[in-house]
Image 1 (cartoon, rainbow, N blue to C red):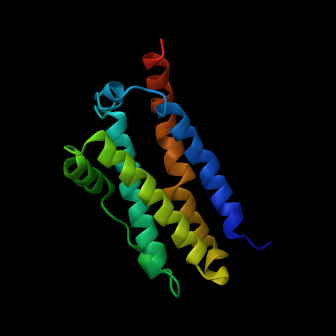
Image 2 (image 1 turned 135 degrees about the horizontal axis):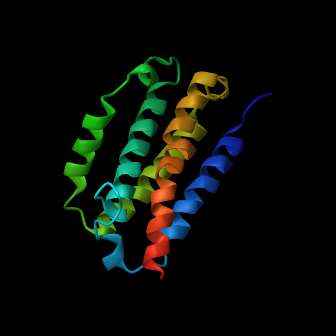
Length: 151
């Protein structure tokens, strides 16, 4: 069965909506306070997710004819530290705008993939890892944070 951009984007958007729902109605002061278990704030978490989405969008844009760009395996720990340090001083507004822009860029990259590339299982797995699977990694901490903030 062929996978369409609609099917993949629907799955991404459903998972992404879980993140949006948890932070939308929370005061900015709570969003920038480093209270997540890893010492990050929700702002830092959104900046982290955005950076990985930007990376995925870039790699998908480069993978229209080959899987080679997606086969590069970064030093995840080092990249996460670098992302955190680069974006630590960003304001809430900067982080949220980047979070939304990265997401839109990623969706556009998926739409722009040729159909035969989108149907490649390797590409589908790369998209899953950088979207709904990545969101799911952070969702438990975000849910616990949301419960604490709303008590």
